[in-house]
Amino acid sequence: MKRSKIAGMGFYVPERVVKNEELTRLMDTSDEWIRERTGIEERRYGRKHEETTSTMAAIATRIACERAGIEPEEIDFIVFATLSPDYYFPGCGVLVQRELGITHREAGALDIRNQCSGFVYGLSIADQFVRTGMYKNVLVVGSEMHSMGLDFSTRGRNVTVIFGDGAGAAIVQPSEDPERGILTTRLHSDGTYAEKLSFINPGCHGGYHRNRLDEPVDYGYPPADTYGEIFITPKMLQDGLYYPYMDGQFVFKLAVQKFPEVILEALQDAGLQPSDINLLVPHQANLRISQFVQKRLGLRDDQVWNNIQRYGNTTAASIPIALCEAWEAGKVREGDLVCLAAFGSGFTWASALIRW
Ligand code: ACO
Image (cartoon, rainbow, N blue to C red; front, side):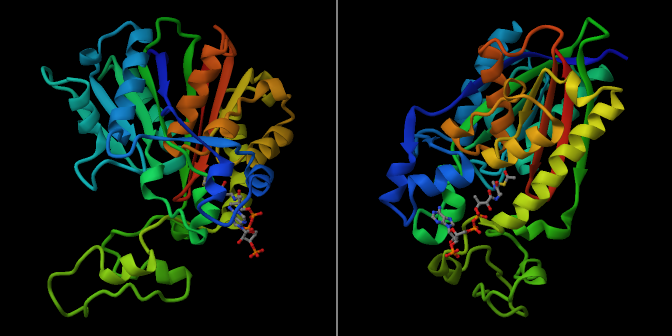
């Protein structure tokens, strides 16, 4: 069975740079707090009401296609990872397909909701499709327009300062060289603490899931024995219950455990050691998490690519943006061993090893 490889990558970040200083005018925070706790100095926000998750993904994809030497209409299958889709449904997969003008053939599109590990999950899906010979050109794209869904008051500061907008795309194709390409992918999940990092409204939970872990919350739902249940109640709007929620310290503790675990698992699977890694591209959750993982694996600074300082956490887009940026900077050369690793909401965590 042939391996698959990343044949071309592209990324797009909006022009508008939002420095920490700008956020201090909206909420009670400081440049010092944000830098110290997260490493973030600035992030990008898309042009409201003009740019969307799918339009940014289309720009990144066009670049990836050009570098892979294909036209967008040659894409057989789309795997789209995002937690900030344009619509509740349909998913962004078909929207980017339309944006790219892929209409004349029987392409398929799949949306995945694996948040920060969405890109690595997507890459694994693409790898399986390509290796079995089902598809030749699979697009894996991660894109996020976080700035449209954050709480810019002091109430939301622990989450809002972390996130940024952007998109990254990869074209996955069969590899002609049996030694090169995706060596392995490892995927994991555990829903026990699903609500610890979540965006639960609008949803049909009716208060059930969230209440398993926290104090009961009154969402203002109509009585259970009435028909015409609604996803968004006036009370949710009034109380700001339609924003992401994060128990930061809980997430931090699990992240620093799962990142090294899933990387070592992939290395073991491929019969390799941490010292064999030429470049680790971790999901850009928090610079402190990446530094912890680097130390744990005994890697030098030049073996890890971090760009959270400039883009914040772009969730499903963070790995393809970082990988593409590293490649553009000449940090990914033929024959290099590249390791991707992610941890995020769900919780889900994943890794991939690629011989470039
Ligand atoms: N500015 C100023 N003060 C703030 C801010 C802010 N933006 N946010 C929170 N605070 C305050 C809190 O209110 C709290 O104040 P108090 O002591 O008076 O109650 C104090 O700072 C400390 O809050 P903590 O949440 O305990 O701060 P912590 O040191 O844990 O840092 C952070 C918060 C950065 C979110 C950290 O927990 C973290 O990085 N967690 C990992 C989660 C993560 O990386 N998430 C990214 C998305 S998920 C993913 O990609 C994996």
